[in-house]
Length: 419
Image (tube, rainbow, N blue to C red; front, side, top):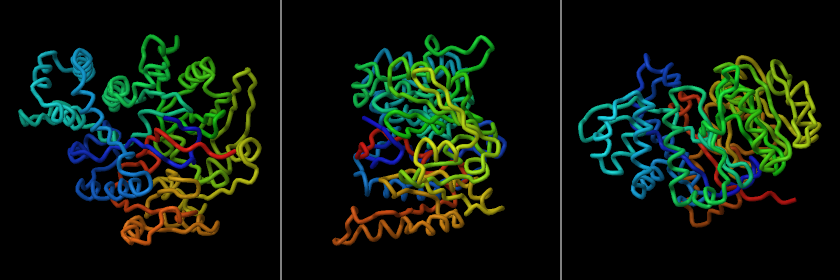
């Protein structure tokens, strides 16, 4: 497992299909569960199926890994660890130890579903609230070169996700090489990562973490990730010599700009899709580059940093084509939140039509996902012929969840870019 950039060809990715718990979110719960809207579950599931089918077309289905499957497989193999894990879940949910018997009476498949959806199939009873944000696997873990960061959610509604992911990564066979070589940085480890003396909590999510190159990690300071945690993470990364630079991008602590990947993502080494006011014009944002040797550089805008430190030939595509009200609307519906499958080929939502105009100006082809999947059925189809293409996903329901294709993917392996 290795990730050294945002744009190397994607080879293995962790996802989670929308589960039935999403269908239980009520309007009254939406704020507490960090889900902005209620969705029509069957349609959302179908849209996500198209997303997974496109990923499988490029990566092979065996490399598109469902996190619920990993949880089930981890539960099957573990004894004492499983018992302790379930106790932690109950404690976190404020439930008495008596409920442990309810959980242990389930098969491993049903137990995995209960831990995610909250529904106890055998007793026809809801034990927990759902965790609808679990579809955003980007937030729960991030590969940084050959190390894995287990993140720590800022909001209590996502704490069960942290416990589930911690159990999987420490107990599933495919992650044993990381565990055995001490290459997991676990921000949920309360002994190593403690709150500050001022009471600042450990809080950082994967949507605020991007690998720019093998030496450079970009981290957003946002609504969900605080400066104290970025500082602690930076110390650990430098101590382990994982990267040479940590680039902190400060953006307003707003729900609109929840993570840095809601306002910018790379499509290739010279194309960045972004929200113009914040990233290009620098309104309300700033950049600080921290070097392992102690050197610090400050920049007034993200654009200035990118042109001076990353690539002076970078071309900027703006959400909504840089025009109001479309730039605000399409930033909100994840027009800046794309995942790269290979350099110059990325996935986005089909509803961000004004953002598409910016890509077309740079010579990108826009291809609906269903059309691509239909073409792939032809015996003459060549997947390698897909170049400089933005693939648009059906998004009537997926976009209501406030997370795009970047949010819905946790890359575990990307090809190393050529020198």
